[in-house]
Image (cartoon, rainbow, N blue to C red; front, side):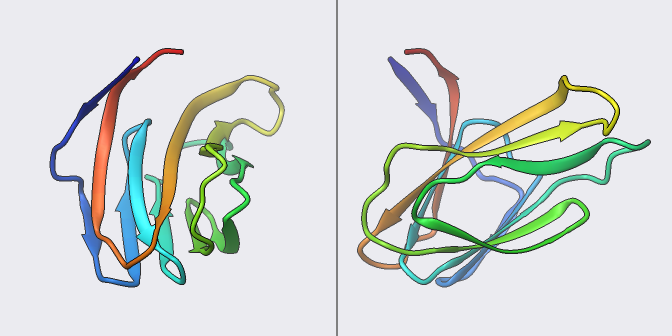
Length: 121
């Protein structure tokens, strides 16, 4: 069962370039092939850092600088794998925070974002 709530996200969009700042876990982003996605997290205090730990097959990483990540979306089908980020301290195995985004490729450029408030299998 999936419950979806639509609301404006703190992001700026263009047909081919989308920037999400501190996205909510469970956010769904629909983008056309060839679009770029930038994800920016607040800079963490201390030694913990954000890292990509899960990457869908249709999303190609372009750059990572501190708490900002850039990706290229291609293809027309999603394998259902979320784009997963974890904030971890380098000396610990447990993640402090986890953020999963579902990036869905669409046939034309789109600027739709929504957030899933709760997800259960």
